[in-house]
Amino acid sequence: MLIYPNSSCLLVVDIQEKLAPAIHEAEAVVANARWLVEVAKLAKVPVLTSEQYPKGLGRTVKELRDVLPEDGYMEKLHFSCMSDPGCNEKINSLRPNQVIIVGMEAHVCVLQTAIQIKQQAREVFVVSDAVSSRNPADKAMALERMRHCGIHIVTKEMVGYEWMQTSGTPQFKEFNINYAR
Image (cartoon, rainbow, N blue to C red; front, side):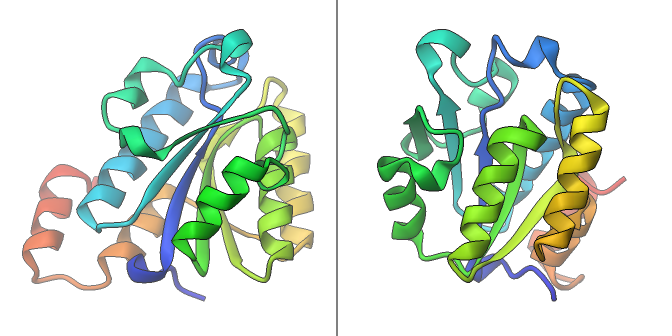
């Protein structure tokens, strides 16, 4: 099953200022999430961002705020975006058949969101190199559980190249110059 830019959205889950310092390999998660946000823009894929209780956990980290669309932010108190009425409505308003998820923590908010989106009969892709938890074992178990639930575990480059679909276009040329390794 491939990821298509015209039927997907990118969901950035809770990569926040006060949470990130406690997350295992947070710098890599932030860098990979930023890469995906930039590639999503290039591929014209909508991007939404959730913030779990921002009064307590702070806003989304600065490294991402400057590339995220302002109209895509969603505040929530529920761990799952889909359990929060406002987030659920905003995500469903896009009518994505495919949801690509990055964020923190893999075993809490990312896991619960991914499972509930899957329960809505959508294709869900969790980007393994753009999610993490405080404890690496929690991330590993979350990815295993998601796999067993039928959620696709992918890497950022898999997503990027699937969004590009073909070489020889101006879009791919920009991707190749600015984002391909």
